[in-house]
Image 1 (cartoon, rainbow, N blue to C red):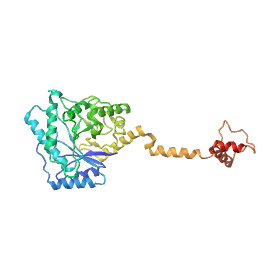
Image 2 (spheres, one colour; image 1 turned 90 degrees about the vertical axis):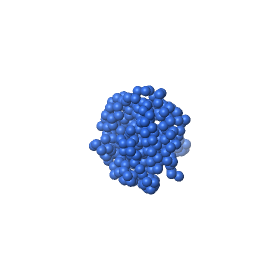
Image 3 (cartoon, helix red, strand yellow; image 1 turned 45 degrees about the horizontal axis):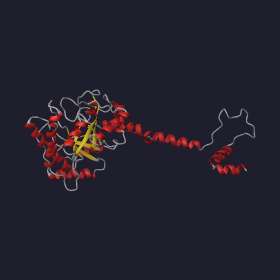
Image 4 (cartoon, rainbow, N blue to C red; image 1 turned 180 degrees about the vertical axis):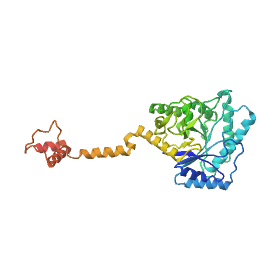
Length: 357
């Protein structure tokens, strides 16, 4: 399992890796600049190169994801805001590529009531401009995709369904550099019930027939303060919300999902994910694995099975139905005779017939 967390960034970037290690995360997510300011953070090429090298050589952190600024709104009818959003996305993607990030997660924005169909083309244009205008990934470094995050569904937010995200990708001619990040809280709030194995199977099929499972790169792993279908973005600590451990387990334990990075964006005690939140998340994944794998993934169950198998090879005393009330010397069952009977049962039928003769 790969349970990660959103951690603080910083000017030198590398401390973000150690922040992840400190809470037991195996992948991390950071903002490439202040999430609520337009001013971009500038990173010298050597800072980006040092981070790439540290990430590639890190013994426990497998992936770094970047999150684009919240102010971006690619669906805005305000031309000035739209242009600032495209410029900001382009810069965020440049930094993510320079870091060797596994993906840049993006909230597309809101059409503010204009309607999804009215903004599809301008959003696709923004994606194409950012993908073409951002600084290319360094030689030998895999390109960083833009990961469209599903929305909770409030107001005119774009990406409130898998079908909307599919339309956006199709409008960019299926560009391979566009992918998907699913937020478990947003999914729940938008009315998708994955809290059972059957519900998760339906979701997997929906992802595959719309966006495609190959585009799903990571999850934001959050419980919800909002009820199913509540259409609001309100994260809760794992096990403390309306989804709960039982509701999250079927999703994160599914064979097609379990190895994807699960990035915690929970409030913790007010400052983000803590070590205990990572532990809680791991317990949910373990519970999910058991739903699909049963005893094969449960060491106690495996030990019990081994003990049971060993017991079958030992002499079994006669039951009350077959045991005589008074044992005569001729009918006394010794360990030697039981072992002999057991041995006879194991020989081939042909050998048994020849013995009778």
